Length: 180
Length: 155
Image (cartoon, rainbow over all chains, first blue to last red; front, side, top):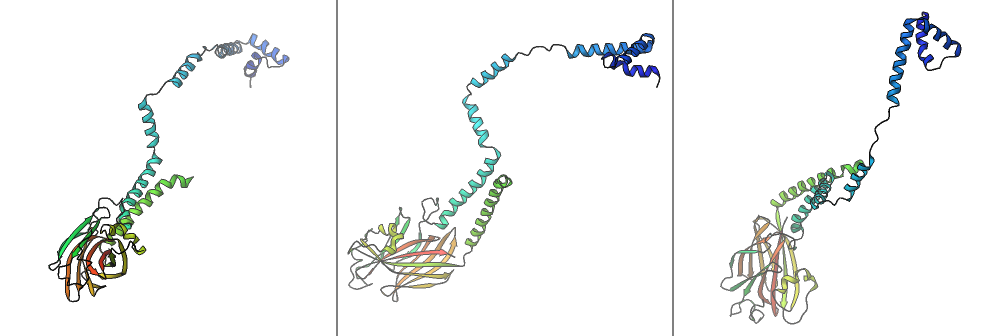
């Protein structure tokens, strides 16, 4: 390594005042006589000046007051009714709730439709007709009454005995007529 | 935590299995092998105000007949094949013959014949809801009136 190369390596530390006095004096003496090293010194000094100018520049002051005023205004702002509804709907129909509501709805529907098969005649059994329907009837000359009782959904076929009392002689229970 | 995330999917799977099970049960119900017929014989009277505790489940149905007392005389349950015939003994030398005709739309069509000795009393065909019943009443017996509850359940 030549003497100039050694000096150029030390110029930076010399400018920063980091060299011991003996080395500092040697570098100073060389730079004063060597045009190339003097040019290197000049470039380093101009770079140092530019960096110092950037680093110590004063930043423009930030105005925080308008920012906080806007935050305060938004906090105090009264929301419109439709915004409340849309927020509620957004929360209500989020994925986990919908995922739960589908099986719950299915289970409820199945329960309602199955109720009638397990508990016939229950009041929640739907519109299924639980009345018995009489398709044909032959009482061999006797009078017959057909009663449909709405409350208990009951169909009653009532046989009136003839005047001769042929069924059970001496029994007058039927002669007294129907007791609907 | 993982289980909690999977819970909705598991619930959905469970529901789908319920639907499948319901369909399977429905298919089985569409082709019943026989009918379980139950004849409940009741004596209705106006002598006192006694209501047989055995008839608790039929209280509302019997109320429509407006008798003062109801007493259960006998209960008889028999399995009857489709298009088959089964006879039930009814007090007073009577016989009730039941013939299940068809099962459609969860309703059972029953042909019912009541005879006293050799004499026919009534011959009727009635369509009732599966596990439902109807009432046949009027024949006199023992100072009162016989009320027959005829119910049927597809098996």
